[in-house]
Length: 365
Image (cartoon, rainbow, N blue to C red; front, side):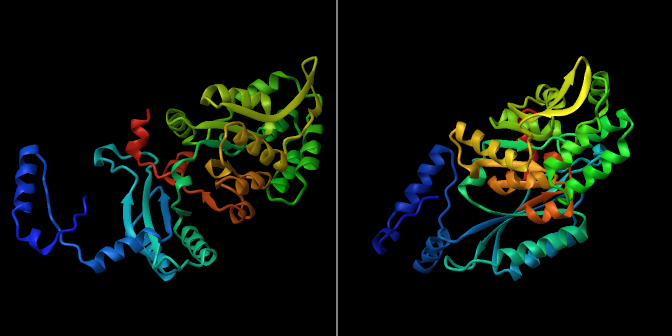
């Protein structure tokens, strides 16, 4: 709209009539609302208030979920300015096998000088999410949120379902030994590099053909193709930063249109796995270093980066990125990341970017 200051004399003139006639001639509608000095001062003050985004997502959301979220936001001293549905309504005759529901709350502080207790609010929302079987994200509504440009993914149990090394271990007949070490490492109970080298050593003697069998049978995570296709069309750069293996990463890179790949190289001689990896081992610190380097290469602020992963070795990059998302992660990883998604597929990340389903469709779905 246009704010016009009128003197008392002009209010009684034919100005408004003239404006209405001109609007009619142009084929547009014109409405006039009187704004008091007090109301104008309120508008100006509202500009300086901190704004926040609360995103609720899951396979199904109901009124109880939304009422509970609104209650926690209000108790934190925030005003809810707007509520938007980001997920599309589905016709009854076209019920989805895996429905998506998402509602976004835009909230602001009561005044420019007040701030909510973010830690307490995040804890309350996490409790609601856990009891309701949904995910709830809390973000600052900043310029960075609308200008993310680089997305870094973990591979195993993030882009794909399961751990490649566990599948290789099954092929080598050492599945149970490797699985125990993997689970302990993902819980953060073991040093990643030490545990990784122990597991790889158990693969010694495995034939190269077994790697191809594993490639053919491990499925993508639900939502991975929709997410990467949409991000690609929107101009995002994507990277795989994985403690897994390059032989599988290259397959995903080709399939999903990933721009960068940094993973571990399994040493193979004469068609036989040696039980070694070529240095350096891609651990948590290396993932964070690679993310920082990729951002610098592309002239990006780290706030413009998104990192997604499920394991303890992903936490360094999740904490470094402007938007770090623990995806179907263990409790210790969820607790260490600012955002988490468990109730939906990977494409739920699009909602955290503020994209509606129709936006994703226009982007080439």
